[in-house]
Each structure stands twice: as structure tokens, then as C-alpha cells.
Image 1 (cartoon, rainbow, N blue to C red):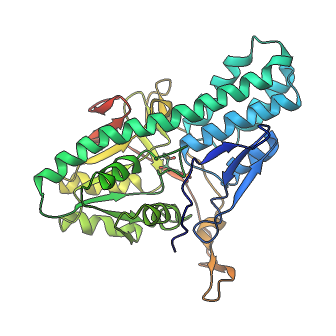
Image 2: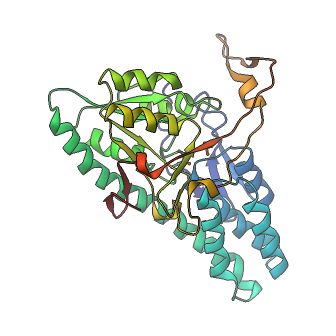
Image 3: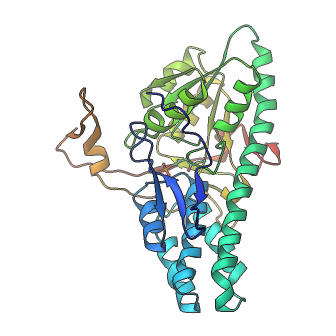
Length: 348
Ligand SMILES: CSC[C@@H](O)[C@@H](O)C(=O)COP(=O)(O)O
């Protein structure tokens, strides 16, 4: 389904400036619904329950959430309570802590009466910067994709991606998708293999939605298809986003990313990770030190979507016990390069 006109910045201040509007990603691609967040508790729920998601969007939403907390209570206690509420929403994406630290440092020395306005201004700057960072990632990635396409100029460039690291996951452009959008717009024939990304299906529901809206040729595949496609020479490069890259270059991303990196390595397919500096965590030594979010087993055991009549139904996949680790770690040795706002880097 293509819902026209859905693309605009993923987060924007409400007309009165006191809150923000985000897309409710739980409803996509079946319904495009903007919801307003007007207090810190609702912003925290939006992150925790994944109305919005993706590392940079988690960071931007949390930054605005802390500004809303200060609008309610600008005291030192209010600042601490707002920070603690928001930082606990999801454990893995480092952008969350980075954005909250940034807002807190910006307002900590101000008089309480000045804090909320300053926090909103800092959140605006974080959101604006994220769009600019992703645009820069796209430009560096475009040069890379141009080079890859020149090796086989008579056929489309085939990219495989996992999860959703698109404009829905950032303030604009996306990280993994920014080079894809810019290459498509520049006339490079490009085709994207979209991993379904069980259990929440961010690839099937969100990345496919984005690519369809942008007119980028794409094909949805079950998560386990990538290895075969690589073996058959049907993948020229893998590009993924990330929730956190550690000091040694290990990459934490949506569960299943590691298996794609292993398959890429075994088949000589380059494996690229797109990230802004806000996703780099130099304070954490290796991927083994990253807290991996364990989400509800119900995400594995149940599926939700519209039936043939358009009624939203939730159906059981299994009654067996299930586990749901949401992220995995790809060792730095499996990463060909990092596509960043500073360029395409061998090392972070
Ligand atoms: C630019 S978003 C990068 C990552 O956050 C993305 O690849 C991802 O794994 C998102 O996971 P999610 O659980 O949907 O928040």
C-alpha cells in the first residue's frame, strides 16, 4: 500500500510550541496518523512502546520529552526525575543517553525559569542537526554507491538492508536509506532487498513503506533469504543502520544483522554500517558491554495486521515459550566500512 504524501520530518513542534507531533509507527503502513506528545510521561511511553523508534528518533523524542518535563517542573528535582524517566525507556540505542545528556548539560546551570525554553531550543537543534547529519551520510554514501554501480553498469545495483534505518527512524533521510534515496534521485538504477525483520517486521512494515513512497524498486524477503541471495550474486552490498557502535568498532543493531554480516563476509559482499556521530559510544569498549534489550515474548508469539476486509486482527503464531532479544552485535572485523557524516571510514 502506498500512502501518498506521508514523508515529512519525523518530528515537529506543535503549533503552540509546547509539544511535538510524531507518526504513530505502530499503525504503519495501514494508517498514517500523527500523534501529539505534550508531557514527559507520554514521550516516555512513545519511546518505550515504540510509537516511534530508531536510534536517532529515540534521541530526538527524548530530548523534547526532557524539555516537556522542565515545562512542568523546572527545579533540579524535576530535571533529575525527567532524565531518569526517559533514560530508562529503552536500553540499547546510545542516542537516547547522548540526547538527554546534551539537554541536561545545556540547562543545568540556568535559572529554573529559563530551563524549559532553553531545553526546547536544544531539542530543536538536535533534531535539525540529525537531519543534516543524515543528509551528509547520504552524500558520502552516494559516492560509494556510484563507485559500486560503475563496476556493473549494465544492471541495477542491488542493496540488502535490515530493519528500518530510514527517515522514520531519524528526523529525515535515514542513515542506511539516505545513500539509497540520493542514488535513486541521481538516476542510479537501484533495487533494495528488504529483510522482513521479525518479530516486529520493521522491514516489511516501515522500510517497504518508505521505499514505495519514494518510488525505489524493492523486494521484501524473509529474514533467512539473504544468504542465498548473496551466494547467487544478487546482492552488491549490505547497508544497515545501528543503535550503537563501540570504541573498537563493534556494531549493535536489530536482531539478525550479525547473520547478514556473516553471510556477506562468506560471500565477499561488502557490509556497510551507516551512522552519525551521535550513535558512536567511545565510552563503551566492545559490543559485549552493550545492554541488549529483551522485549516481550508476545512479539514473537502473536502477529497483528489487517485481514482481507481491512479489520485489524491479532493472531497467534505459537503457544510455545518464546524469547525475544531485540539486538545483536556484529564484530568490527565483519564491517567493510562505516558511512558517516565525515566520510566513508575504515575505522570509527
Ligand atoms: C537509523 S536507525 C538505526 C537503528 O536504530 C535501527 O537499525 C534499528 O535497529 C531500530 O530498532 P528498533 O527496535 O526498531 O528501534
